[in-house]
Image (cartoon, rainbow, N blue to C red):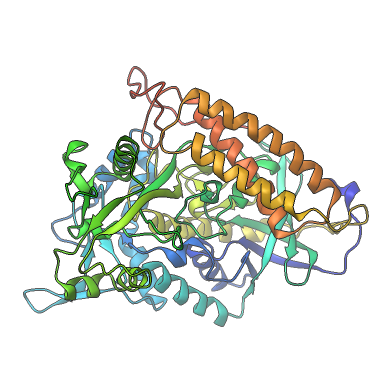
Length: 541
């Protein structure tokens, strides 16, 4: 946003660190920073519990079992990532697994335990797709909720942390400096969606912890907040974006007209759940020798294939062969949620379909979560660290949040004393815009975008489908830009503006990859190109 467009507004405030996002990554970083004399502001676009962390069911992968090993966890992650993981980042992340869990327990997170044959009480470890051992630490089937509530409680109690709910970032504020992009971040313009004003927040460091971009698709397991805001903000500011073609589709989202975003955890398959067709026959053995425990990209494509081949609306996930006691103990949330839709999972299979679930690409960062812009960091799903490669292995995401929150905190605390406070920043100017009398434009474009992304840039792609999607994105970008320039900003408009950028980045990355690898599968190039070392897809503004 150019300075010439700005005039005074009544609200501005200064902090040492501004964290955009209140999920596991953002709150972990806030707590790690605030124990030092650091003023921290944490922005949440909606309620503090509205992000993806709160809804994560499965757990956090870490090596605790004596029969498991760091090397095995590394090998499984590299295998799932289909040749595009950064081995150094994988090792860095995996080796911090146990200490990350220990830190969460210190914050009050209670994980599920069990008594072994020797009478010892130990963490119960579940197993999910792609893992060769049981290594998923969890809190029943609501791990994210346990983590989120504990971190929120600690942050609310901390005198150095100020939490802002219902605050949506309009734009990052940057200034010229030295370095690759020639920019450094100074703060952000933020829409208070309840107070209906744009605030100016200046800060020495900004951290993007905004989560993923899976609301680009009509069917997703993600909450409504996952609109790729941080990716779009970073792109407009001048950061490189990487590997956006690798959008992970979770194989098993509950198929019900009133429950499109309810995830059926991979742990159900890890505990023996079978994927079956309407006639009760299993099919995963026809696609991969690991069956139901194959990585998510393989399972999602298998389900998609069977649905299209047979003209069926869904497949089924059956755990009913386990005892009712076992099911209710291990999957209380899923059991109760399905009951609300008249599905008793102790007696009948669960109708499931694939849905957009996780953004493996994002803002390109280094091992300390630094982006291309000075004093701007990115952690969690918004970032592309090199951990996930072409396909994220189950339960590595919350681990990544914790490890890179720690890494970012180390670097920020080291540099903060040498970063000058931001200069006086002009406030947001709304003198040349008016209230919209055409809100239908936003809702219509929102729906159109998500539908054609699902149809043309989904689990199976072609060059023609990608080209069609790009043509529609170009038209939408023009409409949205005109609308943004004439009317006062709203949260819906900001999300739509960000989402169309994210859609373009996904399509551009997909068009550049002339092979099928990991989560990117195209009928025009169905094989993986092993004639040369695999390369990341990197886009530069």
